[in-house]
Length: 278
Ligand code: C2E
Ligand code: CA
Ligand code: CA
Ligand code: CA
Image (cartoon, rainbow, N blue to C red; front, side, top):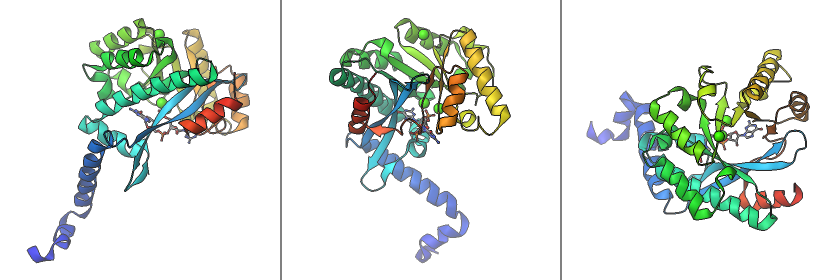
């Protein structure tokens, strides 16, 4: 059956073969992507809900590959996690994000916070805390201006090490936020034992606040609970003006979403800064 070539494979496991081939190809391209400087950070403004004024930005990773074009994180972060490549990639993200915040300070004269996503594998790497400290030292960014976004899933999978790393980061002055809040298993007790500063309400709740009474109730409840625990709240995925009125009324501290701005490449973000000065 050798002469049949590809079709022989196609007979018994067409999808498996294609998928694993694509994975292998992605993996080898991703291994080279750092040195080829194919990664780029986009920045999405996070504003004060009350005034619409900018206070920080979330760094969102993009992969510009000559063959594939722009690859979005949902397509390659899971593979980067599995292969462990997320550790060096995440290190680059941290360094670049801190440097960017310093550039904005130089060009606008104001302190703009930067939020960086941290994935579980990266967080559990023994060198993680050092990597974060090095990024701060190398850039000169004050720790209070860096916020690390950690998914609820990672926290719930709680171990002594998780608690210990969070404590070390907190003690150095870095801010910590719970990303995708509400999508985990709702074991809320971690909120009182871990040093978080911020909850990011998942966009799946925010997007339906004007349509579904239940989502509106949940968002209200999350905001009230967070405030009574001394946490600030960011609503993500804000797309419509009506949602901003709802969030203002409910006292949500910060907002982020296409209504304000899409994630922007750095030059466009800098332009945005000029017109939305605090
Ligand atoms: P996330 O942390 O929940 O980031 C928010 C995602 O929502 C971003 O997608 C953003 O572009 C999108 N978004 C923002 N505003 C709106 C809106 O109004 N409506 C809708 N529908 N979407 C909105 P993106 O950039 O594709 O990133 C997807 C995910 O990839 C992120 O979800 C995050 O989990 C992960 N990711 C991105 N950059 C990094 C990174 O540097 N490191 C790690 N570990 N993960 C990253
Ligand atoms: Ca995030
Ligand atoms: Ca803290
Ligand atoms: Ca999120």
